[in-house]
Image (cartoon, rainbow, N blue to C red; front, side, top):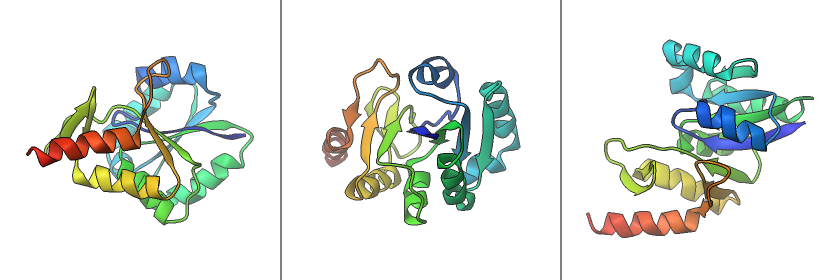
Length: 167
């Protein structure tokens, strides 16, 4: 089948994923990639609960390229999710082909980040990761819910740069 949604979401799997995105795109399971997620046993347990009856794999960054390839060649459909754009940039640099579209959901306020939209705050590492992917042919759209209007990276980039120059 395919990977039907590639998403950055700081909450990874939650209500919006289960009640909204899973109704819009085919999904049989979730491929979650991120060292910090794997290493947080409590979070992994919460994600297993959130996934319900869906298949769930939680993998280290280094395992990502192989697991993505397996997901693409599976008879099942998967959402590929990480909590960080840096993970996706690292996956690309390590040869992973997750497609040419990245959806970005919530990336909430944290230290050093600039708020550029509703539930969207970016720091320089986020910016650099998005810019790398964009410059390598990935369309990056910021969209919390399927019914929301998507904003594209150039618009978000311009807003970030404008706000950063005022600091």
